[in-house]
Length: 251
Image (tube, rainbow, N blue to C red):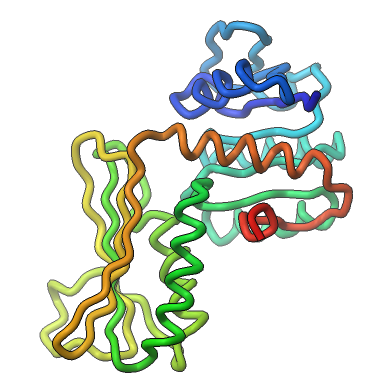
């Protein structure tokens, strides 16, 4: 049985991860970390990674970008792999992740949904086939409380298209001051925030007299937690340091 330490355990996603672990005979949540600790069924909760005295096989992080430094230090010191499911990292923090991955296995994805990662593959294929004849636009929708925009998933989808296009596109996030026709070497990314939308993403390939749309709709946040636990199971069996993602899990 794999022993999980859940960072951000008292938040909504952390609680979903804890529930999944409680119903999965292959894993056990043995400790939680949260800046505002609350009692959790079945395991102790610590206010910081440094305060955690429980041994685990892998950490799952659904917290906040500000918690990254302490969590990475904790995992590197213990030689413990970690699944990083938080979004909104800065360039400096992404560099910290790369550096930590030299010492321990890290699994990072802006979206832990299996469906989104299949969508990324479809976007790559479509971009390679359609090439310069179709404009690429991405729309993402999330709940009103989401902090970052565009979403990390929207950027993942844009990167997937960019990798396959026969030119190097530029990303455009706002058109209200752009008084000129759209350049074909663009990928437009639009964000909508409102209500309780869990996460909707649509990639539009707009050509002459025809449009292709590839979409993913998340009905609940549980899909992300399920993916994170699957990633943790995978990572717990990995010994080689490095940065892993969903392509290693589903490939």
